Image (cartoon, rainbow, N blue to C red; front, side, top):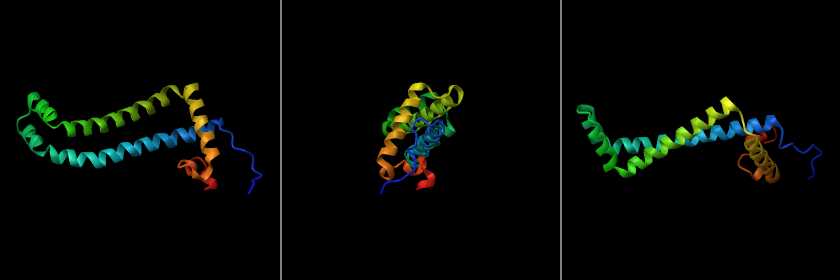
Length: 131
């Protein structure tokens, strides 16, 4: 069924900003989910080391807690990395705006979303009124 509505413009600044905000929100959701899933496990694995550090904090004890629990260190580093990268990216965009390259990339993503239609996972966030 053909629609008589005009094709949405992938270079529309309002739609690009809406897509950028959606992608930032999704990054924060991923960071939050990582913290919710990984932090309880890491705290449980490190419970003995945390108790020792609480009573007798030394930098050497902290170093050994990190070195001896490589999987926990890796998991917490992932959480910190995703959170930090999201914060830096959002701050950069707030302070300096989007670069032309980023605007072009978001325009291309909008065009791809429009091309795929309702099959694309981001369709309902980019086209909230037509969902």
